[in-house]
Amino acid sequence: MLPAHAHLPSAKGSGRTSTVEALNWSLRHRCGVLVRKSCSFSKSLTLHHARIKICIDNHNKQITTV
Image (cartoon, rainbow, N blue to C red; front, side, top):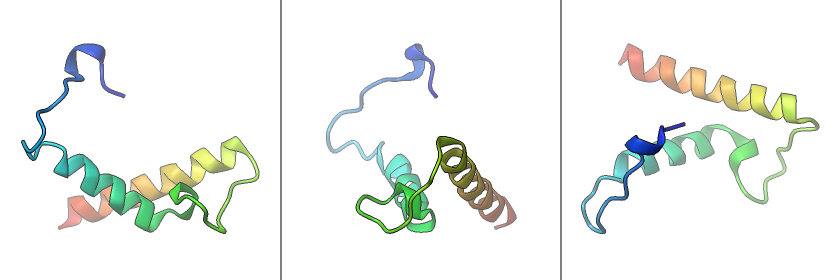
């Protein structure tokens, strides 16, 4: 989460949101529970958080080894 002072809106067409949107796409692509209307679902909130954490950890490992 970003602190309130760091959360600033960006102007339309500035291109500043492309990094965030690329990360969002990557996580949705790799983690089925983040996709709307998917067959993947979590039976509990704990499992939901665990699956998302695993996806984020795998993503971080991939970008640090490149």
